[in-house]
Length: 78
Image (cartoon, rainbow, N blue to C red; front, side):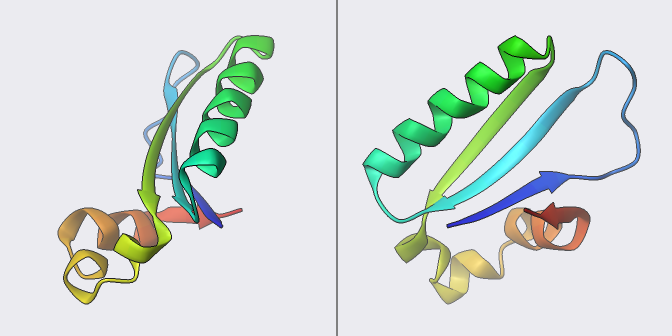
């Protein structure tokens, strides 16, 4: 599993945080979604999760898409 957060440098005190997750199966996605919600709720911040299956992420066309390249270039791997 790979997790990346957005680091565009435009964050303010009331900004949301984008989290991009590459997951191996649907159960991982559901668990991660619940964890992201809980962490955000407990810390009074808005966390936005974007999810992609590992198999799809490995596809060359997808991996080289503008969105994925933007995430990989501007995000911080966790």
